[in-house]
Amino acid sequence: MPDLRGIGDSGLPQKPLSGYDKVTVAGDIHQLVERLGLGPVHVIGHDHGAAVAYAYSATYRDEVRSFVFCEMALMGVAGDRGIEYFMDQREELRLWHLSFHAANHVAEMLIRGREREYLRWFYRMQIVNVDAISDDDIEVYARSYAGPGGLRLEFYRAFYQDGIDNAKLKENRLTIPVLALGGADSIRDLCVSSMEAVADDVTGVVIDECGHWLPEERPQEFLRAVLPFLAAAGS
Image (cartoon, rainbow, N blue to C red; front, side, top):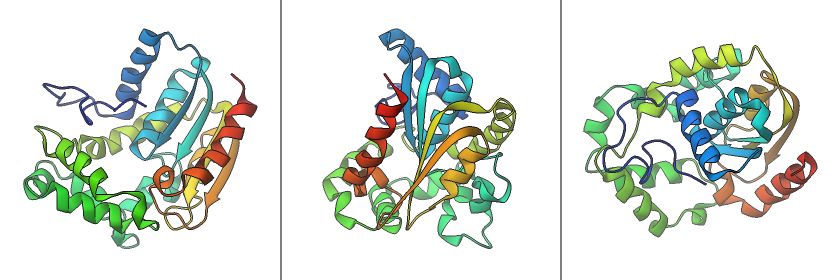
């Protein structure tokens, strides 16, 4: 489960300043897969990682067996049910951070020095099972995000380029099996609608009593959905 470009320890000592569109980040992961000689793979991603996983699956389609898309809506593919829906502050004020993080340098200026408090509030805001992400977990993330260039909000600033890229990628629809997972107390079936806009073989699951942090909040339910799906997709 590799860190994406600029996230965690990835890119140290000098994190890249650019290249955070999901097609470029997918290229990073593809180089890693090739270097490790993993061959055709099953790709699973959550949030930004899910958007990267779609770009990977659509770009390197002959090298992907199946794709799990978790708790994300794709930019540029699902009309009023994509990321654009969440960036409309008239309807979804709880996701105001999408626009805030896209404000170049301003977000970093206001968050810097308060990473721990900011992250704790974020994890608690979008969670149902509050014990799923502990204070010790938050400390690990806070140390990473507080490092030089650690916030990496460029992932948000790349959304509009992602929309352009996704609109082109979806012209060649995915034919591999796709599993779309959403939390019932988060974005629910929007994961499915994003995938149905770009793929032919989509299975959707909404997990009850779950917020945004689906693998952490409901690990057993997550595995009950994912493992049979992977088995059916083949090795």
